[in-house]
Length: 316
Image (cartoon, rainbow, N blue to C red; front, side, top):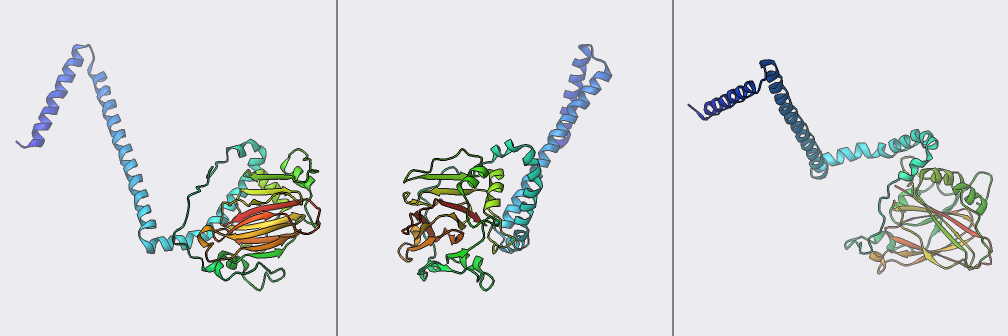
């Protein structure tokens, strides 16, 4: 008699012992049958759940291997999916806007992607050739159709362009910012007046977009980051560094007043690239890639006495 038959006989004997004990306790055959059926069904469900979880894990692991190890498959997927990723997300965001307007408190659930930046982050093998031969920030206003600005910016070359801001307005007022963000009026009489706002809520982002529309030359497939910044400075306010944005391609719009922007090479490229400076006037748009440039905002050296309002956003 083989091992399987021995186990089967042992199982049969144990089963008969259990049935005998159940009858001695006063249970009839029908109740005993139902107890066995319920016990067996639980075991089957547990086994089924385990098989489902095992299948899901195996599928996810297979997809991970194909996308991260098998280069041909990864290239095919990226080539076919990347082009529709941002349009799809943009459509989903548009569909949910009416729902967000009905329940604006839901925007408070926005999840921070990163609360703290890593001060020790450094690329040891970063190539700096995109900024090595850049000696000035070029004004390409009116030449948007002749050159691919987005491609040049992705290569590390910064540009400045004169763009239209809010329809029928040449500049953005402090009152318009206060109304868009629903904030209290600010005292702007101080010589060193500064207010810097970080916006990461969808409703505020939509309100600001009416004042600062996306530059017309951005590709349709690009997606703007929800995170954006508004810097309000008096003409003589102290210098400060512009923040690193979610996406590496950054555009800075000067809503009113003037401000000098100093583009300093990133730490990895300081030994190979030179610092640049550009005077940002009302309606100027500066585009740069923060992989190569880390900008600082400084007071303008001109006699302009208007309040400076600067809008910062990024796209991927």
